[in-house]
Amino acid sequence: MPVIDYVKEYDFEIITWDVFEKSEELIHQLNLPSEKVAKFKNFPEKQSREYLGLQACLHALNIRADVFYNKNGKPYLNSDKQISISHSHQKVSIAVGRKAIGLDIEKKRDNKVLNIESKFIRPDEGFWIPRNQDLADYLHIIWGIKEGLYKINGGNLWNFLNHYKVEPFELVANKPINCWIENQEKRDKYTAYFRRINDFYLIWVIEK
Image (cartoon, rainbow, N blue to C red; front, side, top):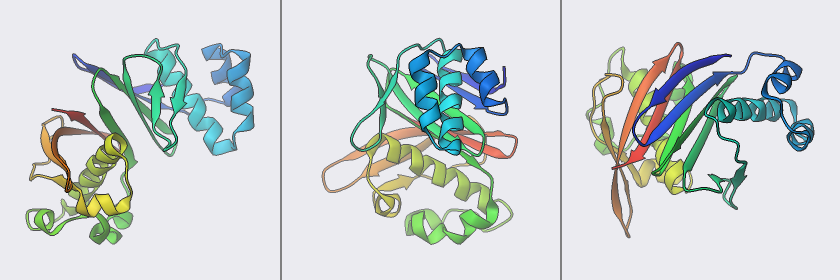
């Protein structure tokens, strides 16, 4: 089974699946019930592959519950556990835990992230980011952290620049990074982590 990364802590698990199998093969492996097969067939091709990847991740974590989505598109389980989902190209990652968690997996694409820096990097972040060969790596990680905050909090791209803040950090995998959701009503602190999976970044944000 193509589980390519697994993170387990006391109060959450993260699994990443490389969806390279043929759809029919994966449906057979997972022994999907007829209603899920019917749902799979109703999706466009890209979305159907992501759906199978999600089912594979749930199966690997021994979660049989369905995933639902609220009016804002945020996934949830009918249980006391929180879930976050991310996909990039043929990689699908899910995080399941007892606390709020926001997950992002991103393929490393330096030109793209360099071109949109001004859309998500605040002045009080830009001054400490090294302007050297590590710049794109920092930008990928900060973008992923803010994606994680977005998945916890909701909002839009405006929040990335104005309401989500990342404190200085070093390029050391699995080391805690402080980050914030702040607006006129609240200032909440979170902890983020990152790791590399080949040419992808996996980033997660959890409640303090």
